[in-house]
Image 1: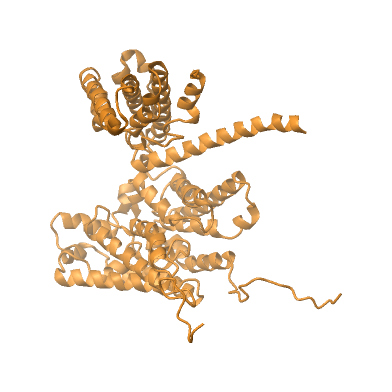
Image 2: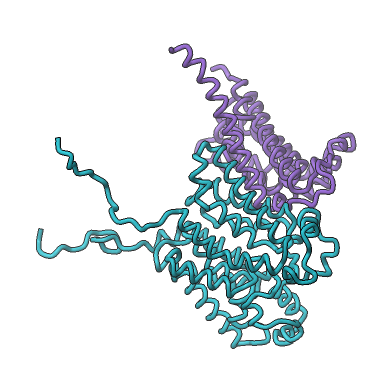
Length: 362
Length: 224
């Protein structure tokens, strides 16, 4: 017997050094700057909210795996539940009550992910599903935007006060909250004001402020700059490809500039659309979810164009001030169709699947 | 051929339940079940229509030829529904306002035509009545369960406004399950209907699987 036996292993023989853990870990790292900034900007209640959201995502994941007799350790430690919990937290208003976080994270994991069959099987992005569900189910709580209360500054709630905000509620909520910028503009437009007027009245508004992030909105809507850095990190690490972000940015710029040029009093400009609301978070972190977006390059571009177009339509003419959640869910639903119609050509065959003509007669 | 009434009962109420097993009539099942009372009203209205149409179709089954049976069935069903629609409008006006469009739409309810085609047109009158009653009660059971879950989750009450429908004697049914409840709005909206229906169907299959595996054990014990 020879010890030099050849071990037969079926292909593929070249592996990318990727694992679920690696991908999820990197996305979480990319989200860390904006998460920390959000905690700084809105104070301790936000920290509690994120912790509750992460914990309930893990508990929900554990419960589902246990019910379905699936191995618990590998699935629980792959980081996917943690990432979903974090994304749900980032899509919530900063001082949302504790039960919003629990309901949202549990919904995302149980209904958004595990009911479809677990990791990699879900049709819709779990975090966006949870956000849209919360927005429809609890419209009041989900649109209470707190003005920034940076940590260590006066006005930032202390440890106990923050616990009170998260678990009992805020007493004089109207004094410290205001409409998000997109929502404010939407209401003012219906009152007949023009956009330059509205923006002038808005005291500390500047595009720079929106870019750096000292605005009110949900946690992940604050700093476009940090989201951009996180997104570039993911691109650099090759966790995501450029197709969806570029398609989304180009579509937004094209649509917004076109309408802005046509009537600047009625339509916001492109930079405003990109820097405000959940656009940046969605462009780099939500829409690029490998499970719920198409797998071919052309399909991805189509997906990105669709997301941004629907978002623009909802923002401009729809009933909600921000439509990125709905836009992504709608395009998620179309993803199987896109993947069906835009398949890559199989090697050795033409586009319709017939074998290529061989040189010479066989 | 002896008619097994026990089997008809079991099929109608559970194993071949119109909503949970056949998945027919999902449109009214999802649309009106925002409260348990609505579900009960819709279920009972459908049951009555189902009994009447089953009787009529069973009576005419000898004279209707194969080719024109569907138009005849639909005509009979439409007549029965029109009667129910007018009766409800006259005597249960408040419930009629809530159920609104869905009462005339019982005509297109696939349960009715389904039972006519698959049961009443092939069986004598008495079994057809039993089938209509059981299928209708199964449908009512499904709608009340669906409505109750959605109502408790969505607005924290149970059988709200039941007295409008059943009279003041049944006012005790109206419960506030969760006081000071803010309401989980999505459960009352259409998505909640789909979510609850999905979970209820999963629950039914779970129970079926449990009872199946329980039955399987003694057989194994005998064979070994």
